[in-house]
Image 1 (spheres, protein in one colour):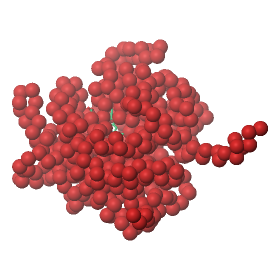
Image 2 (cartoon, protein in one colour; image 1 turned 90 degrees about the vertical axis):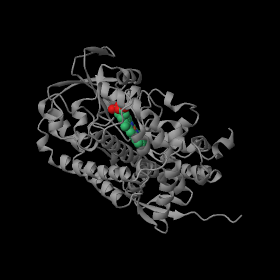
Image 3 (cartoon, rainbow, N blue to C red; image 1 turned 135 degrees about the horizontal axis):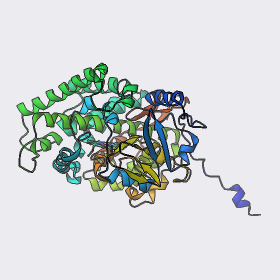
Image 4 (cartoon, helix red, strand yellow; image 1 turned 120 degrees about the vertical axis):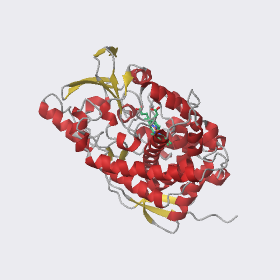
Length: 467
Ligand code: HEM
């Protein structure tokens, strides 16, 4: 017997982070069962899945009299997201509209096409490269705010940092007085009216009984007023040269060379803020949570960051110095996709995976489900960043859809990844991240995927070795 094999230390068991209970059987099948699903999904969009959902690639269902199909087959999901036959359903838009108006996130048809085309130059790699100093400042601001603090609510700190980053990138403003107003409003919105309610499930039109959505309209109105105030301040004191996304938005022109209206600028800014900071702050939170539970990966990541400190990042290309960082972020997005559910409605009849799709059928594509699907991944529930390390093009991994796919793929993906890398690097260069308690953190989803409680983290300053 080869004794050396017995003596060799066994590799550490992969981290399996906790998740909501997977129900043994589906709830549906009766009106009572469907109401139970509606209640469960209003509380937690990823809380009503059953065992079979992680094994099946297609699940047809009827929900409150409406036909639907869950599509977890990656090729079919990508086909749906690419096809003009499928549009965002009215019900998916209802919780978002008060924050984003008619901006890119919810626009459809020719209006969407025009907006997407005119916004494309705002998100090119060159334009995002120009935003790196804003991300550096936000990362340094976070490190400064945490300096000397040992027990910290990082969910809150990342919320603030991601808002700071997007405000700097959009308006060249820090998360100062106006920023604090927006942060508070966003928090109240995400904790309350962002959750789906029964009216959203049964509504046929965007405005059906929205007078019942008082809190959505109230907070949404205050949010858009705060955005208006930031734009008015810029119009009153324009920059001499392009410094941020708002400068680029103001300079966009449509096919007839017309500038965007005030309302369109406001709705685009509202969309960027709403789509941009909650999603990225969630990504930062889940990454910190995983790293706190996997000190070996955290140490390797720190070594990578110390070999190329964040202050040296001058271009998007420099981020290639952190391959493990990118893999850790991708693996976090796999396990905890900030947007856990993407919905579409069929305009015309179709067939997907042998299942008939009637006009009006709701097609659900759940990155949460696809990313943890037992037929699509090895060790689907394990945190294993190495699975992305050898992938030259992780985007080409068919079953990996954190930013959606097709023409409506997230326009801010490059922005979010650059921002998250720089903010995390600033933190890891200074502190070790641990958890204050062993209480499991369970994901709870409304529009984005957040934690059931915000745990305290323990931050231990890194003692720098003497040269
Ligand atoms: C971790 C961060 C992020 C994740 C996981 C994420 C995810 C997504 C997903 C899945 C979609 C597609 C939704 C659908 O097809 O129905 C989307 C769309 C969008 N995202 Fe992001 N996003 C992130 C960050 C950002 C940032 C930073 C911005 C802007 C600064 C942004 C702006 C948008 C916009 C405007 C759309 C709509 C695009 C369109 O419909 O043409 N996102 N995002």
